[in-house]
Length: 286
Image 1 (tube, rainbow, N blue to C red):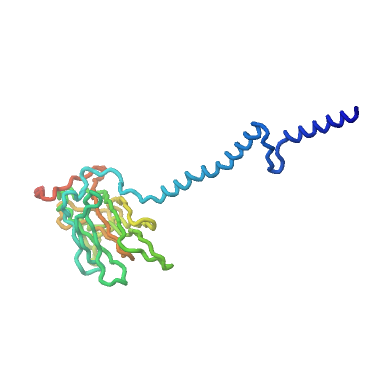
Image 2: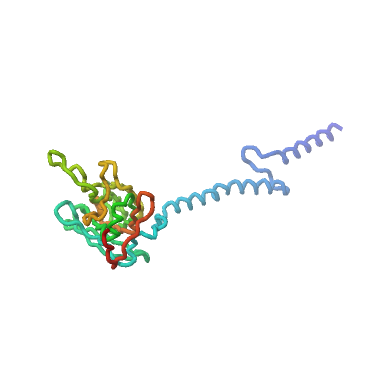
């Protein structure tokens, strides 16, 4: 009798050992469907991290995509250079720190722009300061020049030469785009008792600073109000033949062309000012 009870007790203990949960990471013996299901779940959990990492790698690749050239809507009154005309754009005369440049209308992926290529005589020197001048009376009705209160210009920069870093490494990038929008403001001119000019005839509208250390090409839209807070009379003068818009870029280490497009002028109400056609006669001043 005692022998039968001992045998029964041993059998019960053996059964409990087979159905107990795995200890220390040891899986139960595959004796039924339940153990197979447990292992299947474990395999799924092990595979989960691998599948979750894939989207992160894709996201990193997307962040490295070059930025698009599309900077937003183009105003109907913008100068787009699609007509092949430079709209009075020319290099500022010599006598200062101006660099020699080549100006041309170039096609960039089906879109015509004013291309600025800076020339350099000394290969060891930085590329100098290109200054492009636009004569406003040749771009719009003279009577509207005094209405200019805001200016918008689109720029696309393209690196042609490797940028040399301080640590000796090189990369084909735009590098940076530093410069200014400026022009002469001639609404009133005067002198004080000492003969000093009290009305600025030259003023910086905006000094911009954009950097790009990742891509060989980048596009920016730069906008600025025409400054009127230096002297109350500041502003463009209507019917003034000498009024200009000047675009400048500060010296650059590597050869990087930049393209000008979609120049737009707005009045104080935010309405764009119509431009003259390239071959249009200027309307008579009233």
